[in-house]
Image (spheres, rainbow, N blue to C red):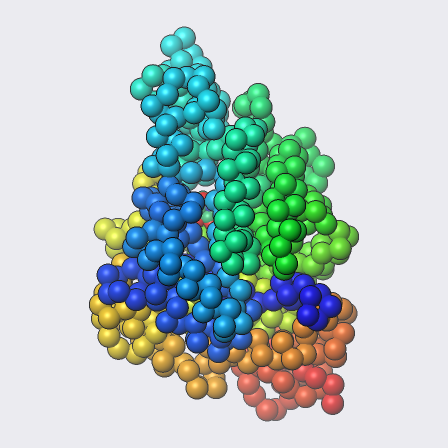
Length: 539
Ligand code: NOJ
């Protein structure tokens, strides 16, 4: 608490999708050595820490969210010694390291699941998961109607006739959190990584942990249920019992200094999301509402205002995010015609509906909006370069299990996971000395770090400046006052006097009084361009 508040409360944290960040050993896959080699870059961005997507031993059937060993690094990425070195080297650069905790499911290659398959129905080995008899005369029907998030039934039958639950891929059996042995094991895993120096955890599908003990059928419309502030509850999403588990974890974190847990909980209701942020639970929960918002001043303002009120009610503060490894990159999202549903669009990728220039302008403006807000911010690797979604990956390279499980009706998330271009040239634009596991578009030479570095007008330098100014002027400042500058304009002043104005219109608007500190589309005629944002300080 060097500044009177914990480090994470106003932090900017950079998300690293390890497979696609930097390849240190020329095998086409990112790795720990690659991250270590790029620590100076991360330090130069000015971020406070990194969150590394799962780097554990895994068959990689869901990008590593199928963990076979929670205490070992995947050999493709390196080993434990390198991971320890990364944590040490990061600390030297002033960077905290968060790791990904995946408590909802293991991989089918985890020792527990192998033991469960080798054991009888009703055995303690099976009790670590959700094994149930089927319905129907011969148990030939799944135990209930629950659907996998990736498509199809959430149940798969094993040869002795029982069914196991997997809310995601068939290779990701859900763990039974009603079992004390499971709880003990995860407390141990948490201690293990904290003892190695990790600053904490991003917790995967934090809202799914506990399932209703009777396994009743679910209403189909999960979104509708999760939107109800005081709803009846859903048998598998956002169960009240999961908060007990979180409190246990928190007790362990509190035995250390400055540790943090951030929840990945896709819950539309603020009242319910705020419950995760109570004093003895998570430190942060992603405010995904902003990420999901269309490019509209009123909608975004409503979200920001609601987030501040809801988190403030439990003494917390929002955690902003515009992008991650699961969603279409914002340059593409904001560049698509408003009537297009982006996931559906990915299937056919009609470029006449995409204006990348517009998407880039809006993404730059959105970055200034987000970085001007009170609270913490998570950036996803490549957003600081203005990378678009790679929507035209050939079918043959698609790796996301969503593609197969949805019967090819959803293309999946590979398009936001294409390796980072570091240099203008080279077989993988400097990602490694050789190729990359997913092909990069030719146009990414211009978006490479090398091409943007030092260019004042580049998106990279915009992010760098914004993070620096945020650090200088906004850290610790939790006040925000809305200003009314007319329709389709969002404006607010922070306690320190910094004003942020975002113009959602196509045409420019006159700027309010103030000296321009930073602008997403700089001009010097007293106007703010359309689809642009500016930061002003009092004259
Ligand atoms: C959320 C992760 O972000 C996503 O990538 C993964 O597929 C699911 N959880 C399942 O672990």
